[in-house]
Image (tube, rainbow, N blue to C red; front, top):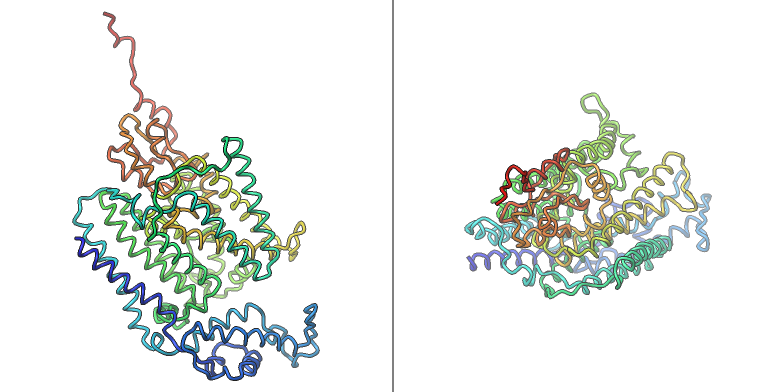
Length: 611
């Protein structure tokens, strides 16, 4: 079995290595063909003029090509501004100097144009080893990596079904980080965020980040000071730092940073999946977001197989894993691509507001309202808009009342699906302390309030055309939220921290939809996990495997039902319990009477004999 696992991991690491260095295995030449395919007419002429000797020069990698292209695009922007009569001191535009019949932004170049051209020109100018052998490298990366991972997992089928710890707290890949290093990691990401903001000159982003972070940290500090003698005291831990997990986490964090802010370095990876994009969408070219969606689905499928093997003794886990895979592949990947193929908005049909924080953005609403396609006599854009509203404001609270937040967070949500599959090896790293729980409550509900306020401001601007609301510009607020919460928190922290701090950091501390569902579950839902304390042997399996940081054992020992708002009802605590102490239930109407009858020993005076 060890030799088979060694073979599997070797094949997987080989594929991962080829995939990683693949970003550099290309040559690039800026020529007329590349310019004509992606640039506007006036931009094209000026880029060619500013390129000079760089034009038609071949570069040995996209790293070198991007380094040469960036200053050219910046000089092109300055030259177009100058030609169009823009005052460099105050940015005022003089329309009289433009060619007749040409609009301002058809002539001038924006910062968005620069970022877009960096990606599209790098991609269109590609040649060399990987671009000319895309199918070969697709096999050497995606296919070979998947085969290697499945070979590595296959010996587990021969083991006895059930949960075995197998040294997870001492594994170099699964033991995570000590608390002090976790704090250092969070501080490092925050400082890095501020550095990025400073480099981009977004003063509102900088001030907003400092103010909101200081406010939340201050509230947590004061609450901790009231609750404990030592505010924010870190618990002692004998857990070793998992060096393999640190490397994997660093890889994931780096990937997300490049994906969000420097996607032009990933063009070779995009070329690997472009034939698949064209086949599904009818000829449309792939972007970095299609690459991300494809990687997302592959990771969930492969690690979903691992979940099925690991929890094959539990029917609930098998069905739940199948559910999240189905919704990710269909509602989030295939159906949006099919919608886009027929010129419809390519929306993820399972993501609800406020997790989908851009749902009320003006461009989204205009895209939906202006769609002219019909299906079964109804406008497709209107159907999608109505579906999003029904999902967010009717289905979500109704189903949560009946089934708890598990119906969405553990059965439907793509974020939860990735956490449950790719993140399952790291679920034991979630902090189970009361300190972490107190921090969690303030952070996640703070993000929820921010999401609601931001969405209201965006809707108000769309409805009344007024961007200034109580002294704040709604466009600045939404751009800050997209950067800080949508990119940094949900992506970089939410997934990159899996190997170092557990697999549900985003769901537990950041997701605004999870916060809303949690409030419904805590006070109105019929769902809870019931416990039979008389059978608990205090083995701790339930707490070990709780990804949401709940000390389940403490509830089980007291025979107390678990109704925590953070519980996503994944059921793993029940699956790993050797005594059947925990049970997931949906009906709570008679919970007090029913549990009293089951768990209490009743003695009547008729049964008492006085000796």
